[in-house]
Image (tube, rainbow, N blue to C red; front, side, top):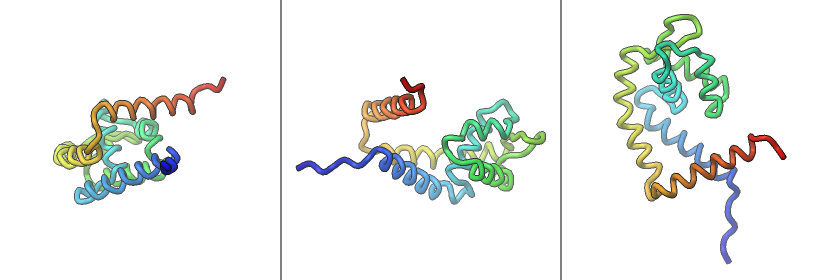
Length: 141
């Protein structure tokens, strides 16, 4: 008899917890967490001075507002980002340099997280998850 499959919600929660735990461990030596690193990426990809509201909106699926606000405080206190204007964030030169240094660790983390998963399996998983999101967030018939 085949064992009963675990519910997808359980597996998604466990996956997110594992990703966060390992990423936090990977970035901890740099004074970052997964969420703080995500904040830096939004700021880096912005137009030079990213609004706090844009950071919160972009990362709203990744963490709640208090967690995101704490991450913003962390990158400011660590000198990774600055406030060129009230309510706006910009990557500092030191932050840009340090983010480049972190990239090798993040690449190793990503490689580890998909070990044994083929490109087709990964793409299928992403498509299935996107479809589930559409099913649940889209209009109900």
